[in-house]
Length: 256
Image 1: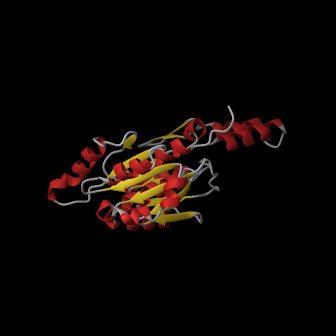
Image 2: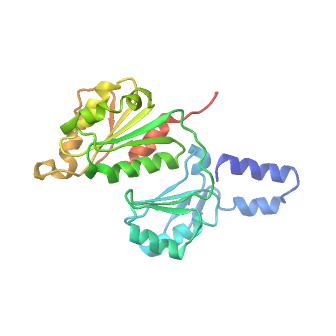
Image 3: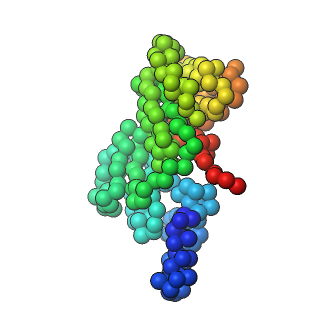
């Protein structure tokens, strides 16, 4: 439940359109829905503005059925991360909804049952160093969009051909937050930060690379040791964390 839904519920009770007993039924699982193998945070959207997100990869089909089946009885949008396309399609057979869509590249399943309100004050730019980094970049981009942001994607602009990045001068000048995704030595975030040092840069190391990249550890350490000030680094392949952090940085909280 988010603030708009709660306000609507209270208004309906105040105007007599909804009985207090019906409102109580709606609020019975607020703020936690206790399932057999999960405790769903039904208060999260109201508390922080973003709904609970389901990490699907490690969960069994039975656990996902229980969680998604229950979430579909409640209001709001649903996001599942790290779910392979075949598994997402099978889940949709068991839990169909006309709003559902799959991001195959980002390994995401989205139930967009309500329009996503734009809450960002500017554009989030998602830059990937190489085509091999695009899956992690897409996860970050879709998550940022799900959180209510305008997102612009730029692919394959790594330091091996830095002139490719410089072709996007308008975006480098105008974007409010940058998510920069890179494997190998992880140099691209430092380059971007050197060009646009007055805005947040979120660096995402990927596990792309050859032997001495150590599954992304070389990129991670390179980003953590960036000589460009103000670069924030998330974990290896953590596109979700980058998209979420960028949404928080870009959020327009309105007048206080």
